[in-house]
Length: 90
Image (cartoon, rainbow, N blue to C red):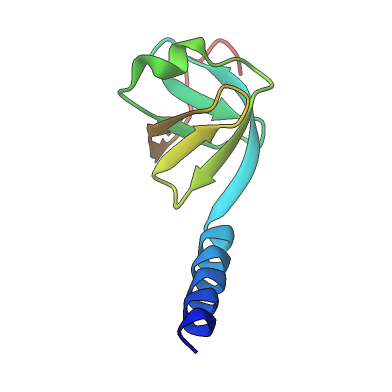
């Protein structure tokens, strides 16, 4: 019975995690560490790690507050924002 409860908990926890993530692709990263995605969403971070991220990298957005770069196996805390109006990439 104990194993069943643990298995049930693991399945439910994984299901909740799976529902709270979006997979997207990076369009570009601005000089101000704003990651602009191909779907138009933008996320800001203070972590300089994103300076090495590239257009075309696949990322996961977790609960709108963490971004995981699947291609580089790195994660940063983010805040959803809007792409800068003076962004030369737009």
